[in-house]
Length: 236
Image (tube, rainbow, N blue to C red; front, side, top):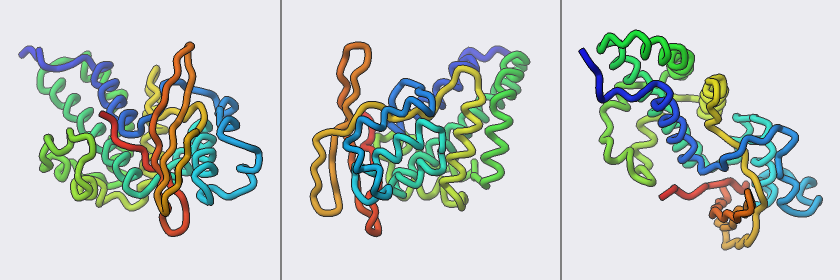
């Protein structure tokens, strides 16, 4: 039995990882923990305030945590809604990888099974440890999942079994980083400019210059229980 519709394992992994990266709207470089770029965000006074006290301080703290691969800490700087959306993306990506491995096995493609299993088994262990329900994911309307900003109810259905969502994301990121050549969760770079605060909502722009080109990406902040949190807008 041939399997013409089955993508190469490396392509499947890239597809899943790109879905996660798109959900997070991160940059494409991989700085070391010492190359955070976070000192560009403002004056040294920002380091004296706690993360969440101002949009600037939470942005800087998120930069430093992401660059040092402190995943659980990074998640604490996101709004619960965005954190849950990221967790849901990881759940769906894990399910996609499992389905591809099953298809390869049914097709008798031993090479694809070997390649996929080496990467999917550690990911599946994380999903099982956090009690992710594949049945719940399979019942969802894929058209809703494909939206730029899936409904909150849909996200909650996916992540409902996961008790510690920050830890789940951290565990998944650590596992994905063990896949050679894959960098699914990358540090913010550049600096934050054009901050505007309107009550409990703030907007800004992340300015990044790379290879002679300027990149501008929007940022949204929301104050939750007196603390500022990052809520990155959906990608087109």
